[in-house]
Amino acid sequence: MNLKKWVTFAAAAGFAGGAFAQDSNSLSIEGEAMVTETAAPAHMENVSTIYSGWRFRSTETQALETDDFDNPAFVFVEQGMDLWGKVEGAAEKSCASCHEDVADFAGLRTQLPRVDDGQLVAMEDLINECRTERMAAEPWEWSKGNMTAMTALIGLQSRGMPISVATDGEAAPFWEQGKELYYTRVGQLDMACSNCHEDNYGVMIRADHLSQGQINGFPTYRLKNAKLNSIHGRFKGCMKNIRAEPFKEGGPEFKALELYLASRGQGLSVETPSVRN
Amino acid sequence: MKHALGGAALAIMAATSAYSEAVKPANVAFNDGIVEASLTGQPGDPVAGRAVFADRKLGNCLACHTNTDLSEESFHGEVGPPMDGVADRWGEAELRAIVTNSKKVFEGTIMPAFYIDSGYERPLEDFAGTSILTAQQVEDVVAYLLTLKE
Image (cartoon, rainbow over all chains, first blue to last red; front, side, top):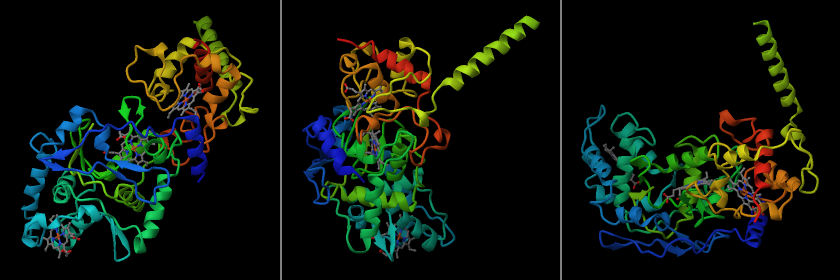
């Protein structure tokens, strides 16, 4: 990885990330202040301040996230609430049969993905484990509507809390794998995530204002496709844009990348469900 | 009828020979950041090059470069330097090198290499073993860039 070289070169040439190009707006959702900017965690060598993707969106898009009534994602959160109480599977149970209140999941979003019994697990894994092992129901597909509705509902319980994933101990090898993927160039266009989201955030790439590619707002409602988008679905989209064969949603590479990206957002508020273009 | 067939056969022969004259991506001769010879032996067409520059599926150069000459197109990116006056800064052989494989000129650049067909990882199946632009499209873009003087 000749990352250092690239960074020095880019800085010398004057095209390094427009570190001042995010806006200075502050975000309050339903009156609660969100942290959209904070000091980068020590492991990020090339970035000093981290920003939520919200700071790079247009004022119209930003406004949609400030009020749950205006936020189009809440239609899907309500669908999540219906699914929460819906009996499914041979055990004839709903989520609500065992989990008293979805609010008990407050804080969970901030710590995922995490290592359980030697495996890196994402929220989708935890939900599907309950569906298959405890409800004897079919698992949900990683990025399909029922799953994103549920991850939005559960993630919402942590809204306003700081991202705080574990990267040491058992998580360390997964984190290293994610970091490696983040800096590896792929696709016919031969780019790494870092080329856009670290070296050039704050800059326009055709019609898009490049952000740091943070995942604190997922699942995200996108105006572009009018639905909730999973974290891995977004990774897949970025890979296809550079004409790279995406990794599998829910597979080990994307989960490792998710952990690494979460760790680049340590301290930002969970904004689930956020609104993006 | 006979005559028409003969004409078609001739046209095919001409197309084939033009094709075989194009330098393959792996054989482009870089010499200290320049590519002296045309990749096709044919002159580039600046009008076609202008279209390739703007086309999202071809050059998509506007994704990263602003260009006053294309002000009718909305959304010019700003990842790289503006293209205004680029021909005052670089000569033809240098521009050919930059468009063919910018990494040979700007180490570690984000700018894609437009005329390589290997050396990248995990391409989508449809693009594996192919270059983003054809040799003639590279020549067309170079011819277009040479018109951008201030």
